[in-house]
Image (cartoon, rainbow, N blue to C red):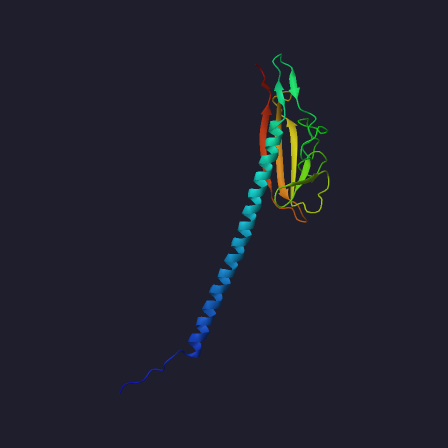
Length: 177
């Protein structure tokens, strides 16, 4: 005689399936949250890198050369903490210590979420998402003719996150006919 098998699932089979689905859903949710955080960190790193490169290009564009007679040409008056730059700043003069660690007037500016300049100065204004700081140091091997340019950009706010730092060396070149 043939035994009949019940149609459908038992309660234990349903509970085991539900437990497996719950564990899988929790794993997927955690991966989704991790992916979102990683994407946001990558977006912030890309933005800080672009903003640091923009400031580095401004610093590199300042005059730091020799005229045809050997005289030194140095831009020590452009204020890059303003947009557009003004002629009441420090240009490529050696910066005071700590300009990368704190917001120093003339060596810091603030940008909104789109990377647009908002203001400069020692305090970030409302709406500032990025803080950009820079320093100009003499190169120890040739302090009269070379400058080390350092730009640091991070997100502003109650907790500072890691940012981007770019370093370059600017050396006087002869300007001639």
